[in-house]
Image (cartoon, rainbow, N blue to C red; front, side, top):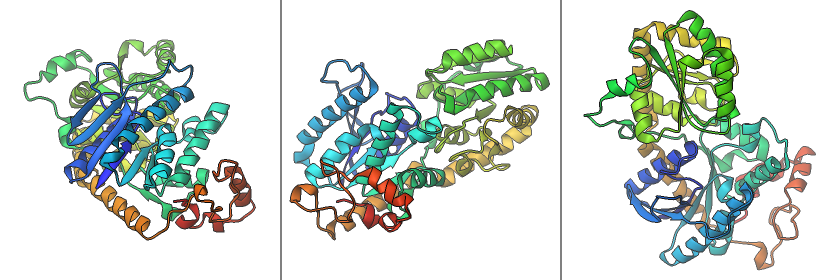
Length: 442
């Protein structure tokens, strides 16, 4: 089987969890005998084309003038992806797997141009990140997410929480969606045997300090402001705590200012972006990991911490409760509650035995349930189902002079009118969104 994977990011270009998820899945699929080609955005210093764990990675260079805004930059990337995919078409691909709205333009065009089934994975939603849709840009991104889910033959979500969210936001029927978690492999978290971890730890905390590690992009939905409020309460009860925040993002200056205002700045180290080798060292020298998100579709960083044997404190929101078992592999607290977060952290700081117990159970859970090989096997099974379904149906499109098969309103370009869909759904017409067939336009 030949799969064309489309992703805005892929290591070493890492903006969030998307890059690691796409890389982990692609490598595991390749190890299982699938021929995987990834088209992704290139950056200075990265090779245009390389083999990565059996995956052919093609990093596209921007062929256009500098973009004035995000939407234009995304469109430029999609045009470049289309150009490369057309060049690759002679080698053939059986299926397209698109990750998030950032590749929706190319995914939709390639699907219809080559009449190849499209599978989409939504890793997050604009509505969830922003607790609603408030600006024209957010509305546009939200509509592009809808377009991608409409065009896809199957939509993969990383958690049951995401499945419920997308069903509510996009009227996705249950039989069109599939929940497949992200994964992690132990060797991805390893450090060299000769690594001087003691010296590395001294760079981040004093010998008598207990080190709390938080990782993630510095954006509001990751809840680092809540963590800083909680950390002030922690220091009142455990003055030897040190907090290391590994990540970069637009919220950094505000967080640094908040730490100073709260009086905790001497105990907080803003590490900045941590590439995989640095991330792994941090995971091996930390005592506790904390993830205070207010919106989290899955939480791959929590999975990585558990895989490294760290006890985890996390918000009870989104997909995190599907990763962390409360009282077994970590502790869950209400999202946005600094006092509850502090109350969960302090017992772990006081008890090395509790930290060891939860860390060991977390590592066992990751090994048993969240390996990329297991995720890839289930993904491959779904690919095969999609291809089997494709062989049993005729491909009908607007360019064939056919009307909409499900009777829905269509726009001037043949695209289903999502606003008409919304009006009908609100009126109680659930028949049109009740089955996968009613949502699939081949």
